[in-house]
Each structure stands twice: as structure tokens, then as C-alpha cells.
Amino acid sequence: MKGLKSSSPVKKKRTQRDYNMKFKLLAFLFLVPLSMQAQNNGLEFINIFSSDMNEAVSCYRIPALITAKNGDLIAAIDERIPSCGDLKWSNDINIVIRRSKDNGKTWSKIESIVDYPLGKSASDPSFILDQITGDIIMFFNYMDLNSEKDVYYLKMTKSSDNGASWSSPVDITSQITKSEWKNDFKFITSGRGIQTRNGTLLHTLVNLANGLHVFGSDDHGENWYLIDSPIHPADESKIVELNDGSWMINSRVNNLGTRFVHISNDKGKTWASKAEAELIDPSCNASIIQYPVASNGIDRNILLFANLNNSSSRENLSIRASYDDGKTWTAPKTVYAGKSAYSSLSILKDGSVGLFFEKDNYKENVFVRISLDWITDGRYK
Image 1 (cartoon, helix red, strand yellow):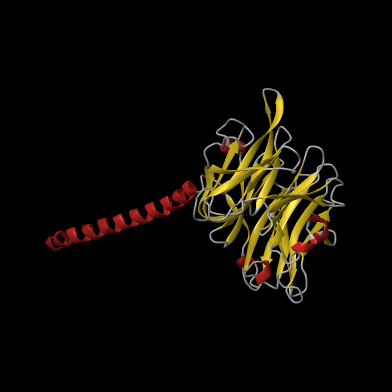
Image 2 (image 1 turned 180 degrees about the vertical axis):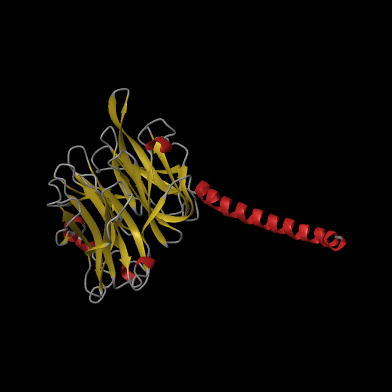
């Protein structure tokens, strides 16, 4: 009995230490998901494109998201084969999509939409939905690295069945650029363009040497024209039509730590430009859309804007709203605090907001569904 008593304290000490270790381990396992959930604000991220889905692909980059007339979601992206390099640095980039019929809960298999022979690449997808015809136009930038390296061509393809099939690509370079721009670094902004209330289709074209330009179509994309009014400073840019019919462009600018905004009251003939100090930005593509709401019985649009809320680093993807056509903005809501980059917004058929973005140094491209109630702190549901 004495022997048992003498060994008891040692055994008890070991048991207590084991208990403490187990408690710490359980606490760690419990708290890690909570900390990740806190970082994500309870939002669920669905990875829909990453290189581990196809061992032949180096990375997927440059997301674009659109909601078809029937409510289906279409997510397009670059499929970059030999490397993650941009168009002029890679001889094999394709445009691929996935589709969702249930507001982004589940997605189709990856479908190849634009795939040229080796040496010819397509990059930077963007969309416009024509609400009148139901057609979806997808734009992309093209280069033949074998015979015309560093010469950018601008193309489009169209779907008339909500993204199930796509037409052969059409080259629209001569319609929306000038002949003297042939060797310029020029490209259509990835993400999306718009359709105005009178049916005009509008999108933005970047020419770093000659300024940002708007291009458009008045016949549902059959023919296109350039609005020859250069806008400075501006890199990748998104255009929206405000409630009073004026146009607003929200632009990435390089090395300034903030966004620039450009307003036109005469259909793009002239522009008033200013730095938007409230919208800090590390020089990255962003997304802005209109969301229709009823206010005091009057239908109007609010603006939703997603970008990296950081002046120098590609991280802290956030979303905010404006109720006065961009004069003021709500405080940013963090969607993902970690490394992030390009993003694309779209309104889902259930009224929520979809956001498709590059996550964790381009390792994943994820979709997240966000309620308008959360974005606006309950002001709109």
C-alpha cells in the first residue's frame, strides 16, 4: 500500500500534464476555425479555379463574373498553361468558364471557350449582358506570339443561350482603336462593361501611352465605335451610368495609393477627373456595379464597390456602398483580410451579391455570396 501511495503523486502529475496538453490541443483546434471564420466574417468561399484542378495549368488568373438573363452565373478566367505570365509573356493562355444554376452553390465542370493553337494566346475576359436581347458578350485580348509578338488584338465572342454555347471570336480591333496604335500596349479592361438605360453598350479600353478610352455599340454589339476622348490618369477601369444619366469611371492608377474617378455629363465627350482619397488602393483592378433599390417609392440605383482596401499591398479585399452616386461611401466591409487581387461583382437572381476574386497570391479563385443586408448594415435587404 505504501508503494502505491508513493507512486501516486507521480502518476497524478503525469495525468494532469496530459490533461493540460489535450485541453490546449482541443482549444487550438476549436479556435483556429473560429479565427478563420472571423477573418472571413462568416462568409463561405468556394474555390472554383486553382491549378491543383489540372496539373497542366500553372495558374488561373483574371476573374470575370456575369449573371445571365435566366439567372445562371458564368465565371470566366484565364487558364495559363506554361507560366503565370501575362499575355505578352505566355504562348498558351486560354479562356475557360464554369457555370452555376443555384446562385453559386454548385458549379459545372471547367469548359474551354477560347483555345488557340500553341503560340497564340487569349487573356483578360470581360462581359456585358444585353438585357434587351439576352445575349452575353465576352471580350478578350489576343496575341500571336509567333508572328506578331507585342501586338495586341481585341476580340469578342457571344452567347445567345445564357452561356451554354459561344460564337466564333470576332476581331473588333479596327473598330475601337486607331491605326497608329498598332504597336501600343492596349487592352480591354477585364471584368465587365455595362448597358445604359437607352440600350447602349459601353466598355473601357486602356492605352497606357494615349489614355483610357470608352468604346460602345448602339446596335447590340453588331458594330462598335471609339469615343475619342482620352482620360488620364487611368489604367484598368470600370464604367457605370449614374441615376442622372451621367457616366462615371472608377480607375486604377499606378503608384498613387488611391483610386481616380472621372465623370462625364455629355456621353463621354468631356471628363472631369479627381483623386478619390476615400478609396485607397494598391494599384489593382477592382469592381463596381449598380444595384437597383426602391427608396421612398422611387426606383433608383445604389453603387457597390469592391477593391483592396490598402494603399500599398494587395490584401484586404473589401466592399462598400454609395447611396449618392459615389459622392460618399460607407465604411468598407472586409470580405477577406489576406492576400487578394482582382475581383468581379454581379447581382444574383436571389438578390444577393456574388463576388469572384483572386485569393492567396493567385493560388485560388473563389466565389463568395454576400447579402445586401450585410453590405448596407440593414439599410437594404
